[in-house]
Length: 318
Image (cartoon, rainbow, N blue to C red):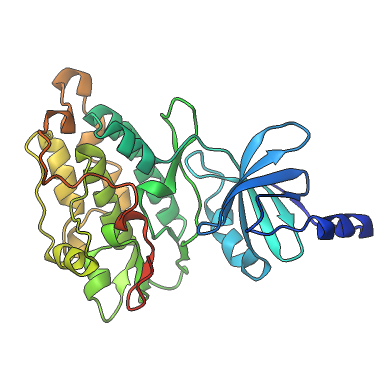
């Protein structure tokens, strides 16, 4: 990872004339042309003007530079985490340049409607490895969801965590207990909604993993409702149905994760050793959601839904 800070008067004047603004269609920062700016996520496409190679850029306010960089220094390098290629400093923003991706997992599930257990297993195993690695380094990801994972290859077989935006650093001399109510509604754990004395942030990450694997295998969320209040009631109940079409091992996996008491859930370390990851799916021939009959009551993964809407409990933001 290289870091470049502008230090010449001519460069400063050039950047001033072509200063970055999220509202602009395109801007130039260093050797990169920034386009397709997503204001809500602070992400955009970056094309190197000399090579034409495409990257992804995340821009942040200068004051948030150190806290944004810190999680990457703890967990990188890792093949399943989008590692920083270069850091550029502008007048008001810092620009993190990442390798490009080939679509996100949320969009992939919407296009496929369903995944066979074999494919879901290979993808979910990579997701679990990311969470296990981060937890072992004292980094809690938070805000875990399908959209956070993107494909590293055009064939869409290798996943990587796109950013560590909401990550929390667990100090060596402290617990992983958090008190803020942060997360995405469809993926938030019951204890985040109910706790008044704090909750285990690592266990909350694992709950989100349960929502992810359930959705990969069935094409719908275990808890879903267009009304946030009704959704939270369903999540706090902890009641859901696992389709009979799934293998016994997959059902066991889901029930081992989506357990209402946080202390009864598998840890990310334990989850990585679950027998489901060692099944020969070609032999057992399980097709997961392909055997499910669709009805008007099925809650498929939506395009724009609560699944990607960030919220702070008490100050709901959609």
